[in-house]
Length: 144
Image (cartoon, rainbow, N blue to C red):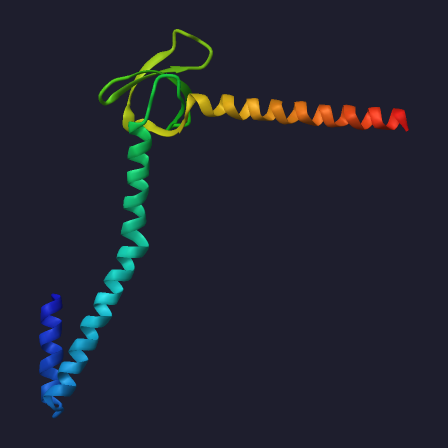
């Protein structure tokens, strides 16, 4: 039975029970409001977040560049060598002969080439500053 049929049956039942026309129409309005709230809730809890995640995944896959480190949907780690329209050539492992063309949709995660290097440089800078601080403390202790 469809939704309109349910509404018509509810209206007919309300009229047969001896209720006034307003009481029957208010119950139909309440039913319509209930279904509207239910459908809106399902949209905002299920459909919208899924669309947002798909958009982020698509943006990530479209931003691929040679040199990026990737993880495929099957869990393999590799480096992007070339990016074509729908195909990406990926080098896996230390073996320079293992170059496999893949579809763009098979890439699950991307780490940009510059981000890992920048993180290591920051760590080196912080460790250098820590060493300088320790040297200054040792000099002060020797002088005292």
